[in-house]
Image 1: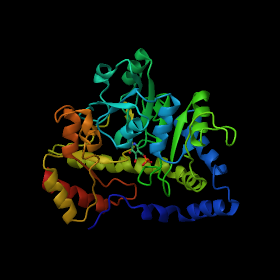
Image 2 (image 1 turned 180 degrees about the vertical axis):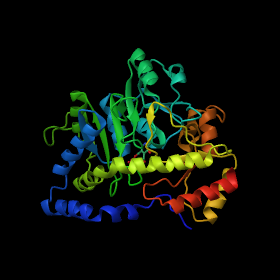
Image 3 (image 1 turned 45 degrees about the vertical axis):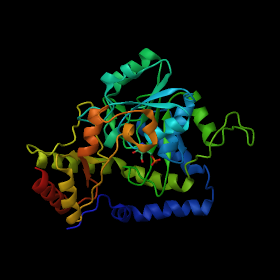
Image 4 (image 1 turned 90 degrees about the vertical axis):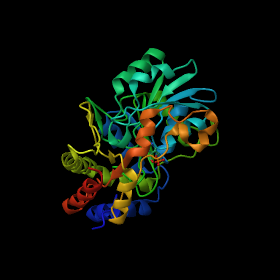
Length: 366
Ligand SMILES: Cc1ncc(COP(=O)(O)O)c(C=O)c1O
């Protein structure tokens, strides 16, 4: 039985009437740029996350870029990022002329290791950007403590973690600014690119709003050099509909994850470690195995969708070859990059499909 890694058509079929109506409504009212649905979504996501304001932008990548600008990161500054994430986490820092400073991850959660951040801080450090990878927040309290001690901003890359929890808080509203992506494969995915930043400080909200519209508050008269980075109204309309289902979809992912956890317990397959502090929303269910090549071959042969998030740690990216890092510099990140495989965990995955995935994975890697 073929099993996709993600099937957005299946999801659409369950909400088609509402989605079509929401999109048609935008076509009818014609307010395609910063129309009413954008403000509606911004308000709803701020409330859901426990922040005061949401600012819709064109993508998760832009959310990170504009958030860095908002806290004043620029040429010559340093920003601490985990060595292991989607590439935007680091390239946004480089695009501002700042230097990403890589820190190794925890071997079990794949998130930034709070215990080794302090050693990477220099007088040039301006911010720390933890990533809530795969839908589980980083261990934020010790990260916030280090940031406070050194006067650093904390920008959460919550691209994969909308609705995830950390103790009594929600992803994105723990640090100074939180960044979401609405890339279609996210738990809350748009019908194209989109992103949002959530903040509670008014000055950050105002700066974000300015940056996304060319850096101006008054037309054609920018205060700062800005961007064209707005969340399209049509995306916001679709996302407002989907938001009603987000909690249920994330719960369904957690149910699938629990079934995988039980099936792979007491085998050589390393299951994702869900920490007590976290409400994990499993944007990905990522296992680690010693024989990844063999497992990938078997999954491919059986037409089971999988992907490798991520195959190259930041310090080994070609675009950073001139930074002078060596193999072995970030052991946990390197180990993850050679052993992880993400398998289907989307909400609509059927029991029979999941049984098939379990059988194939266990036959090869248990
Ligand atoms: C951890 C992380 N950061 C940043 C991004 C960038 O988001 P986008 O693709 O919306 O630009 C993504 C998603 O692709 C991501 O997973």
